[in-house]
Image (cartoon, rainbow, N blue to C red; front, side, top):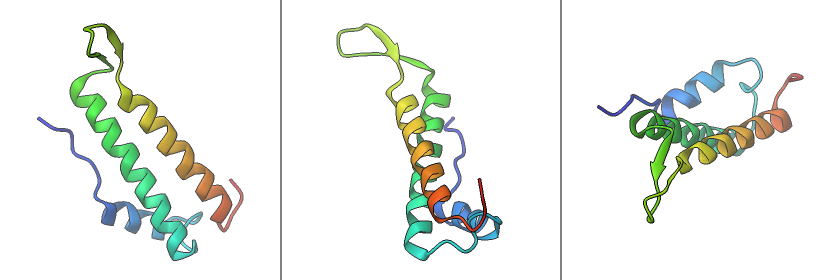
Length: 88
């Protein structure tokens, strides 16, 4: 069973109500939404498939989606800091 992730619309609605991001310019908000959606999707893959997977050679490695989640989350935080109406 695939874990439930938030839709882009749900993320956007949540951000529009948040005191830090409610006044973000439209394009910045869109970028933040996309990064948070990417992070949610990557987290769902890790939750479903496990924290380790096998590579093409059969070796056990950390799931690549872990790095995607971390990078997308960092980018979203950086964008929120840049465009927020408050101090983070």
